[in-house]
Length: 154
Image (cartoon, rainbow, N blue to C red; front, side, top):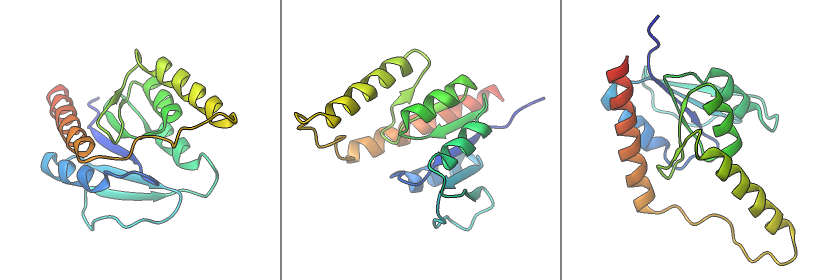
């Protein structure tokens, strides 16, 4: 059985949805946009919107449940990335950084450390660095490379 490539987007706070659509259209790869509230999507047969209930992890649960070895997951959520990697999905952050089975443990540890620092009174961190034009460019390149590789394997 051949599994076709697809893209699943954890869309509630995703800054690169338009870029996902652009690359998906070029490669003719279906996209499922998952969010807790209705969001605008292009009127195109390759794009499907899934609106889940407002339960805290409902969108993550949907994405993780539908992840598979030919799925490309777009998320900044490290814990969701881990859940998808267990199913052999390919996971890319909106900044174009891949999450891998080798890197996810360190990312989870860094997340826990930062959460601890933010909870302390000494926290001076203002959160993650702002999204830059270079991040968008790196994302486009990584998604394109990933889809080319998946299509060759299919």
